[in-house]
Length: 178
Image 1 (cartoon, rainbow, N blue to C red):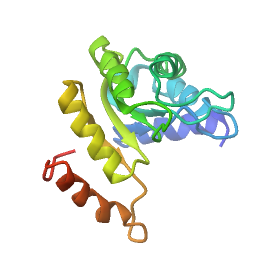
Image 2: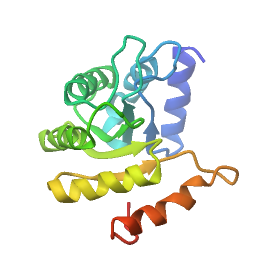
Image 3: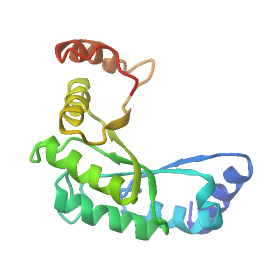
């Protein structure tokens, strides 16, 4: 769809009661950031009436990506500008960053929550053990923790079920509501 058609779809969805919009800074992959820009234009005054989620961390085509503090602080400002908002309701780390310690990522995201730029944080495309590790570390560090995990999960892709419970047990956490 072009921009005008996309805005019409979003406006119709809002009229029909949709209250969650989920995107990412890399969508669509061919023109990164465009999805956030269109959503920002479409929401206008309705911004306060929706839960707005976006993701960061994947390569934006300019070697900028990851979970480092430096990147996160730049990425959130870019997303806020494109989305035409002062806050993001749910900010996801789109994929694990093997180059950056998760502690650095969690501390940076915690700072964004404390600053009011982000309300909640989540992760996406994490193995179960990584989600559990991040939950455990957030508890140990006293930072905000991921409140959700968006994974590839369907009747055909059920790996998440096989790895989460053993990972929780390995950290002595039991089942957690996240």
